[in-house]
Structures are given as structure tokens and as C-alpha cells.
Image 1 (cartoon, one colour):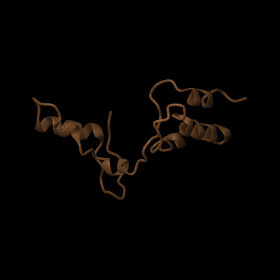
Image 2: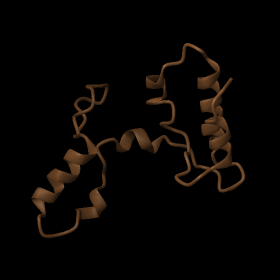
Image 3: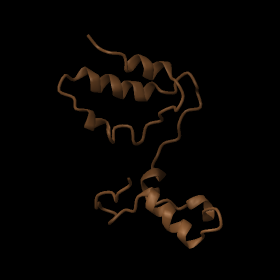
Image 4: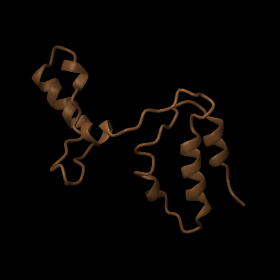
Length: 105
């Protein structure tokens, strides 16, 4: 179930699901106009850095975040919620991330 995000400096934010649902209701028999753009959180994503095309380096930044998180004994899983917001996380198996996610002694 989708819910609205917290009120922040940009005011009330609409979830992506609710945004798509609103556009669908306006155009029920057609695809979303402009593929749904602009998205409700578009401003947050404009600041995203350009990700490297070097396939060998993909996943290294995400792996470093996981390493730092798991190295702290008091780390809580909820801390990872926004940790990856501006990080390129590959959707396919990645050796860097797999190694960082291995159980620690």
C-alpha cells in the first residue's frame, strides 16, 4: 500500500503510485502522458550525479556503504533507508555488493 511521504521543505509530496493513479484517472483509455513525467519527487533526482559507465566499478559505492554499515555493531537496518538514495545500485548480481553482504564473524 502506498502512502504520502512526510511533509518536507517542498511541501506535501504525492507518492509515485498516487501520481500515476491520478494521471490514469485523467486519461483512463491511454498510456500515461509524457510517461508520467514530471514525477512528484523529480527535484530530488535532478541532483543525481552521472553514473560511471565503467562496468567494473559498478556497485563499488553501494558495497562501500554496506561495508561501513555492517562494520558498526550498533547499526540498525532502518539507517539504510536513505543511504542509497544517490548511489547507483545495479539491479543484477554484482560481485562487489555480494561480497559486502556476506555474513561477518
